[in-house]
Length: 236
Image 1: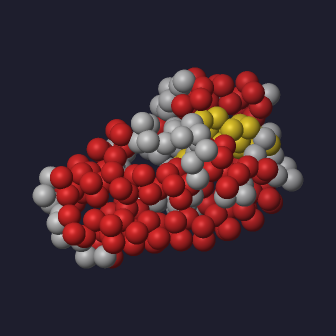
Image 2 (image 1 turned 180 degrees about the vertical axis):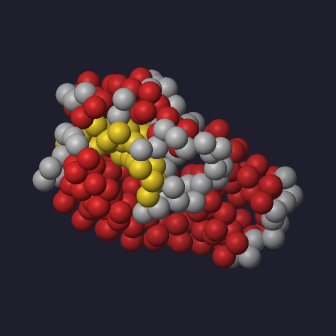
């Protein structure tokens, strides 16, 4: 194996916790009186409207703030949430989420530094055009040889072509490549179509897949990656 391609959102930033669930955890912690269905409506709304908000120079903190604000505005406009709670709730949820990401990123850095001695590393992510800036802001960019942001290349997962673009740019073939991501549908299945080895980060997802046969390996934390790679080498 020569290269490892990682997803970003839900993988490198939260270690397998899908952002839909990460936000919902925050709503529950702060005792926000909304139903899960109401929250999910707000999450879908925020996802659908993020592209018009994010600029290429926006940080990770700013990106999170946009999405949380869109959710809270949706909830207040629908009268699911009283408008007087809006500003304070945005700040509390944002502070909690960014703190957790920064803590996790420090662990991820150590893992990536170890992997760089043996592998080319890349990121392939559905993002908003500002992923390069975000990785620099989080001091992760120098650990990767290639970065593919779906907005910039015009192809989104689950289209396997986005992974093929990464393979072409980094100069490796699918049999020499491992793909790691938290989304079975968007990361694992398309990477397997190309012939990559796949490691599914099966953490806390919004929707569990009905079948998982395309995942060659399954982990619940990125802390397990190095042991899995040893196993892959032994099998080869």
